[in-house]
Length: 280
Image (cartoon, rainbow, N blue to C red; front, side):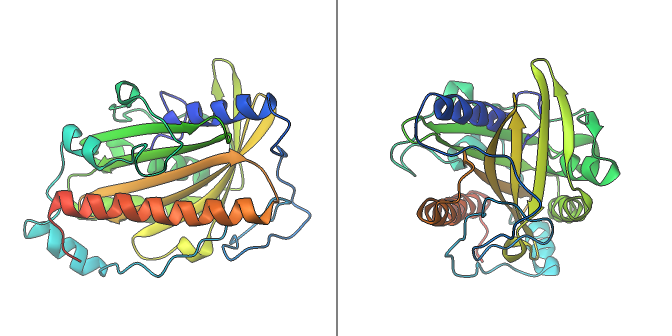
């Protein structure tokens, strides 16, 4: 989780993408615009932008109903994982050749203090608190965030799992994130080297029971990157996979990004199910 400021590995990935893009003649970096329509199979539920979000080509994942999920966890499936167990679930360089990561830089801290927004309002605060799996709201017991980078292609991957005390807390997190996302148009946070502005947009085809997906245009140092998130509730945990890259309208690049997100999210979800002994 942790897409905020403190120790957030996706911010590290985004900064790396911006640095690589600035040093390369390839890759288009542009801020979102509210004047042109989106294309692609993942259409947003609100505002539009000049850069199309990546379409995904995944068959529908089978997800149990809320009652089934809660019952499964209560009967012994979905036992909360430890930090060491989470590390084995996260994505690695073997899951997508060309990416590298340093396991020593995995962030194993839990967010205990809410991020302070300088702009955005209550809905955005709800959205950020949920995305960061804030312990004071959800009782988060463990979390690990990992950054993988591909400097040659100016892309990055953020792999994360947060563990909650019960399945109901995981469902509440997804529900709060969805509600906050629907009311949050843009937000700004302060950091030591300058403000970070985010423009999140829900992806309708990923907004379903126990799951949420969104595009986020993140502006750092005046430059914008495209981040695409998918969060999935699994037992007593929530899986999050984020792809980060330059803002672009290239159809082939966007399709590849969407396909990669779907595949990697499914890989992490399956590992998380196996680790918790969940069979659905």
